[in-house]
Amino acid sequence: MSTLTQAPSKASTAAGEGLTEEPTPARRPHRTIRSKATPWLFLLLPLTLLGLLTYLPVANMFWYSLTDWDGLDPVKNFVGLKNYVNAFTQPANLRVFYVSLFYFVGAFAQMGLALYFATLLSFSTVFRNMWKGLLFFPYLINGVAIGLIFNNFLRPDGGLDSLLISMGLDDLILQWTGNPAVVNYTLASVSVWRYMGLNFVLFLGAIQSIGAEQYEAAALDGANRWQQFRHLILPSIRPIVGLSAILAVSGALSVFEIPFIMTGGANGSETFVIRTVHTAFQLNHVGLASAMAVVLLLIVLVITWVQRTLLPDDPDAKAARRAARRKTKEAGA
Image (cartoon, rainbow, N blue to C red; front, side, top):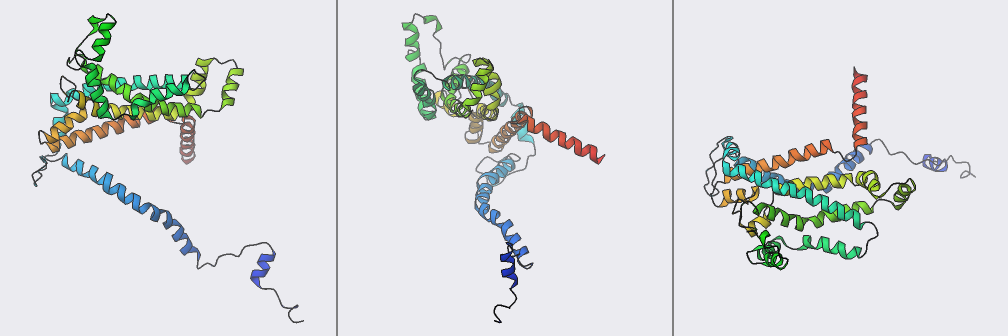
């Protein structure tokens, strides 16, 4: 009888009312600290590796760029910004920027071709899968192998000359890699052929992620293929286009494999990276080469910032953030 009349405990009362038991005040700080520390514990190892393998070498490179180190001498004399002045005043160093323009223009031609083929093959086309494979296949080939293949194809009396002769176009035969007036066009064209497959796959994946109902709605509104591309496809793949533009700029400035294998930088085809390697390991001017590498890094970062500022991934979100900041300032005033 006494059991039936006993008052219920606090826990059973809370459970009976559908409420969960509140944690004791002593446990809250400990649980909060542990919950905050857990993500950092998971990130500790990758962040350590990132710092040791990426940012520490970059810091070392920046330090070397301020010295006259030759790569062997244990003594490194501080020379200030002398190496940066030499990087922008020596004619041989300035010429590599001119050579980079060929690859810069070629990179945007490559993006245009890749976007054209990706748009074309995203619709119903005869042998569509075969064309996709043919366009992407060059990207799978090693860069050294591509250099050797085109060396044989473009050499005097090689495959291209034989093809032109068979077509009666003897007058078009040139020294494709030996003529300084032609060599950079040739090498940039080979780079376009090799890397277009990567842009093609990126664009194709982005275009195929657009829902079929959007195409149907556009068709019902009377939009033709060009209007669908301009007002539906291009805005939808804007982030991928921006990413490809950044990759194109950085790739144009850091070209190495194909010109190094095909010409070794001869006949006016020396690129920025070939010049940097030549300065570091043949002239033993590691300090100057490090300054050139820092300049290359800064150029890529500045171009990336300009591209992201002028062509943001989501212009509506950026406009909303600007409006919010403007309202905050007005409220503060």
